[in-house]
Image 1 (cartoon, rainbow, N blue to C red):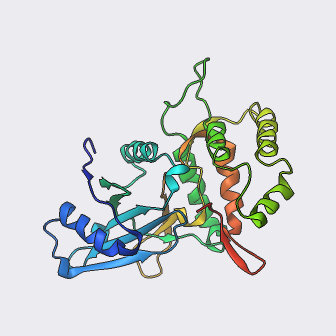
Image 2 (tube, one colour; image 1 turned 135 degrees about the horizontal axis):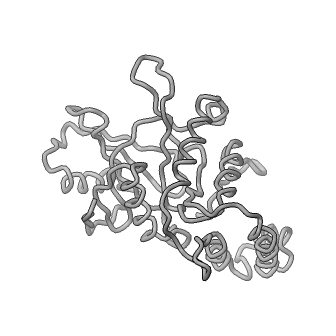
Length: 276
């Protein structure tokens, strides 16, 4: 993965299949487009994902085209995500990365089923998740360094980035009212809470390790043996856009929170846990 080509292509949200076909012609010129099967994966929250499979080849040869969600560059550092992907591939925990394009990337298909709020509680599976998380946390000794030479958590700079996106006043009176029910002085109140958390948590002694930071159920794939009704043999973590050095306890706690799922129904309106 020394040189990853960049394709000067922008894939429109309403033309993902056509855009994916153009990309496929460039990275798999020997594939017969008449034999290509498309599958749109609907589990993503901030991105759109389409799988392209050649019916004359094994499913494992499939290609995934990932299109970044609109405006997500405001909360996600795509350059860091690319570097994370390369780092994790070299460590043997990420798939082959074939190319990037103006608003996405293309990589090898990973076989597996996403976790559900039921399967995540199965002892065989949660043990595999724990082992994979431990392997993730052991990766790399490099990262951002504090003055004393230790690895520094990037949590607080990421929270600051998110806080900077919040306006002093929302244009929607309803949204502004809802926000100020929790934070009476708006962003000022939020920043005060962040500082309180920082003072409490910076010295709890949790090791700073390389964390995934987004281990929701749909970012964990269960891989079973190929026998009919095969048992789980491994799990794979996907989507590394929030990966960074962070407190180990954060990754563990965040995953347990995700046991409840990520969708909530409030006043009969379904909101995704995402600002876009």
